Amino acid sequence: MRTTTRASEQPGEAASPGRAQASPRDAAPDDPPPPGRGTPRSRPRWERIRRGGLPYLLLLPALLLELLIHIVPMFIGIVMAFKDLTQEYIRRWGEAPWAGLDNFQVAVDFDAPVGQELLRSFGVTCAFTVLAVGLSWLLGVTAAILMQDTFRGRGLLRALFLTPYALPVYAAVITWSFLLQRDNGLVNHVIHDQLGLTDSPPFWLVGDNSFYSLVVVSVWRTWPFAFLMLTAALQNIPKEIYEAAQVDGAGIWQQIRKITLPSLRPVNQVLVLVLFLWTFNDFNVPYVLFGKSAPEAANLISIHIYESSFVTWNFGSGSAMSVLLLLFLLLVTAVYLLLTNRGRKDADA
Image 1 (cartoon, rainbow, N blue to C red):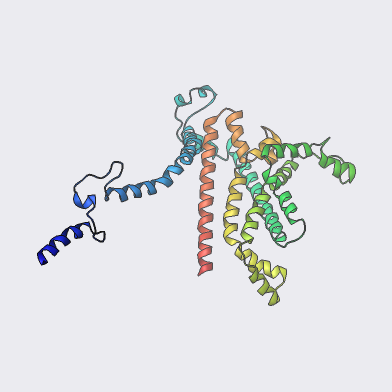
Image 2 (cartoon, rainbow, N blue to C red):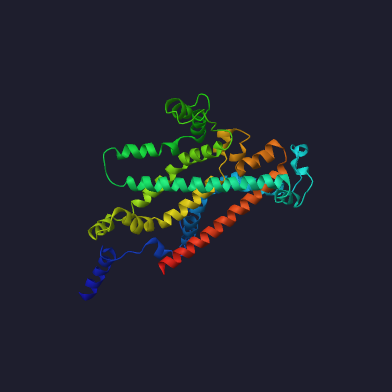
C-alpha cells in the first residue's frame, strides 16, 4: 500500500502546478543570447556610452558652425596680420610675402600718421563706449524698476520698450539717418522749424554732432536689452523683503540702494560686460548711419579697421589692428572678471 501510494504520488508531483518548472535558461545555461541583445556585461557599458555621447552628438552641429564661422576666419585673420597683404595679392593671398611684426609696429607707432589715426580712433571708441553703456544701463534699470508695479497698460509699455531691440538693425538705423537729415529730417523740423531752438538747421551726421548722434542711436538700440535682462532679474527678488523694509520705514530710494541694486549685482556684472563688448565692437550702427567713411568725431575703431582694409586695400595692416583689438578686449575682459570675482568673494566673506 505504501509503495503503491508513493508510486502514484510521484507523477502527481511532477505535474503539480505549485512546483517551479525549469526554464530554458536553467536547462541550457550555455545557450547563446537572443540575436540583437548584448551580453549582461556589455549592455551597461553600451548604455553608458550612448547616454554619455548623446549630449556631444547634439552639440556637434553647433560646434561645426562655430568652427566654420568664427574659429577658422579668426585663424586666417591672425595669419594675414603677419603678411604683407596688399592689393597685388588679393586673389592669391596665400602667396603674399611674410612681413613678420612690421604691420604691428606700424600700427603702434604713434609718431607716424597711421598710429596717430589709430590712437585717435581708439580714444573716440572708448568715450563712445562709456557713454553708450552707461546710458543704456541707466535707462534699463530705471525702466525695469518703474515697470515692477502692476498698473493698467504695463504690458503695452513693456512691448513698446522692447521694440527697438526687436527691429532689424539696418531698418532701424536707416530710419534714424532719415530723421537726422539736415534739410528734410524730422529732428531739425521739430527743433528748428517748430520750436525755433536753433538759428539754422544743424548738421547731425557731419562734424562734432555726429558723435552725439551715434551715441543716441546706439543707446536707443541697446537699452531695451538691459531693460529685458534687469526686468527678468527683478522677478527673483522676493516681495516680502520690500514689505519688511516698508514696515521698518525705508523709503523708495533706500529700498533701491539697500535691496534692489545689491540683488542685481550678479546680473549687472554680466550685463555690463556684454554691453561693453557689443558696443566697443559695433560696426553696423556707424556703418549704416554714416556710410563707408565716418566723420572724424565718430570714427570708431571698427570703422577705422574697415577703412584700413577695404578702402586702402592694406589687409595686412587691417588684420594687425584687428588682432590688437582682440588682445585688448581679452585683457579688459580678464581684468574685469578678476575684479568682479574678487569683489564677490569679499562681499560673501
